[in-house]
Image 1 (cartoon, rainbow, N blue to C red):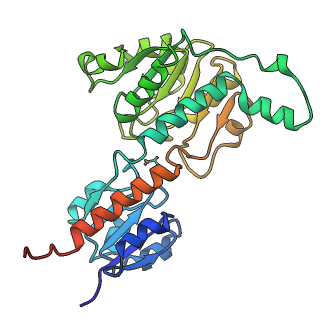
Image 2: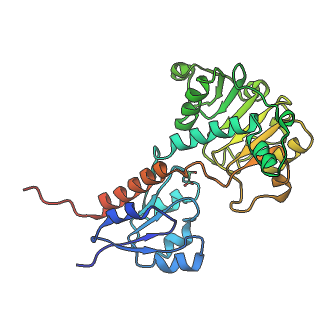
Image 3: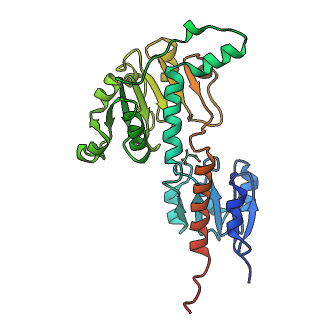
Amino acid sequence: MTTPTVVVADPLPKQVLAGLGTRFTVRRCDGTDRPALLAAVADAEALIIRSATRVDREVLAAAPRLRIVARAGVGLDNVDVEAAAEAGVLVANAPESNVVSVAELTVGLIISALRNIPAAAASLRAGQWRRADFQGSELSGRTVGILGFGRVGRLVARRLAAFDMRIEYHDPYVLQEAADPWGARAVGLGELLSGADVLTVHLPLTAGTRNLIGERELRLAKRNLLLVNTARGGIVNEKAVALALAEGRIAGACLDVFAAEPSVPRDLLALPSLLPTPHIGASTAEAQTRAAETAVSAVRDLLLPVPEPV
Ligand code: MLT
């Protein structure tokens, strides 16, 4: 009997992949190398990816035996889910795998930016001792606006409430009653933007959320606003952010995600009020293990025959 072929197109922890055992043929490839990906999936039954590999109609057409795309992570914006459904290919993700890691990074970025930690460390490394230049501000008593009150938004709310921040959120799908346990107040998007000292984005990227925060929205913000995006690039318009930072209309931004990763606009990167990180929200040992385990389980559950009851 031939064993099903699983293509692993993004880096995943070796010890978790070992869980596929001897009942699968595991083939690794670099999913960002298009010809290599198309060749690798030609006889594959399963494809496991993170966010760098794009699965579209071309990939699906090149993989006539494919039965499952397992996404070791949350976002599905790199998978054409509709085309997969048409092709009869199951798409599975790992929705709980990295939410804690992303929420913790969000809080870390906020504190780092408000206390100037990266700049202070860089200055000390450069041989300077400039305490007075790095006066920051407390989180306590400030208002955080959470855009998107799903899994990550709620975890961020709970963590920032512990810092005595006032929590407001905007999410048309989450009623006030559902947010009560988190001590968060539902507001309209305009009120969220104009009232926030910190605005943090926790939405998926969809046609409806692309460029949701642009020039017009940023003009509603307070001058001390710290904008944070650890969700998806493209929800916040990078040109509008660069302009708002350059003109001092907002105080700072922490961006972990970008519209055209891995490329990041140079003019944006050059701004000292930007704290950029290379999409590391889910980059913890715990999150990577959980995400890979969920993806591997989805593949095993679908492709391995259920043993006969004894
Ligand atoms: C996710 O969607 O799971 C995170 O952004 C991390 C990743 O892209 O793998």
